[in-house]
Image 1 (cartoon, rainbow, N blue to C red):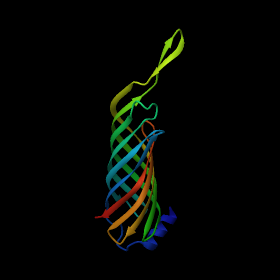
Image 2: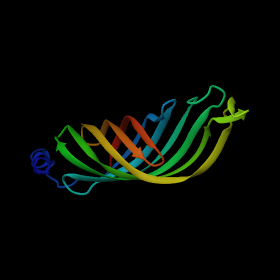
Image 3: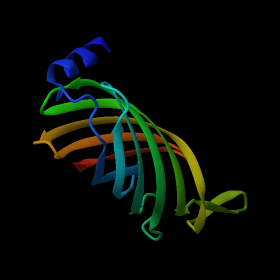
Image 4: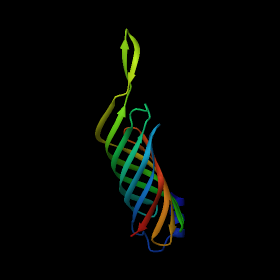
Length: 181
């Protein structure tokens, strides 16, 4: 933490803590083997002090694939509300590296297909994969890593990766752009 404070003091803008940023991005989502897709998100990030940043945002996630059988296309369609707190251990006038934790509330519609075995004379004979649709909500934590590069005073871009744990581990990664208010 001492390094974060010292680096920001050296490269700070001299006006104290600056205002927040509106962010938007898209990325790749890996739900589990055979089920992947995309996510788009929008959010607002704001400095809490020289080395902590808070954020709130929303995401739309769409994954699909044929992980268990080629006859049933499984999918996840989810919308999330996200909160995060990031430590900024490295910050220069041109870039910042951030790591932290978040909490997510997810509202989803899913289709899954699980094997059903039919027995004939106590021997497995047939396997079918009926589809099961469900919807609901879950919540869980996220581990976040982010690199942001500043283009002048009001625009920045970067990349972030998240590992979320709600009903299973989900990895989301991709680029973003931010406009400082």
